[in-house]
Image (tube, rainbow, N blue to C red; front, side, top):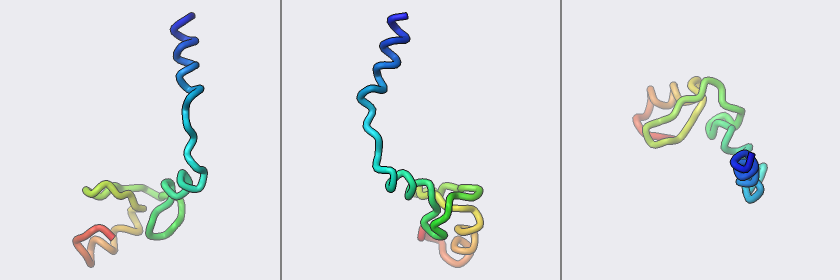
Length: 63
């Protein structure tokens, strides 16, 4: 019981991020829409598969 209470209390100090920054993290930086079939580039950036595919064909760098 004490362990469960301690675990529940660990979320009391949780700091919520700004809603706008969370929203931005869930959108593709190319189409500005929520991710559809998200893929991660080797650099760590995430894009919709349909958005990044044409870019990768033309360029070999992260947009």
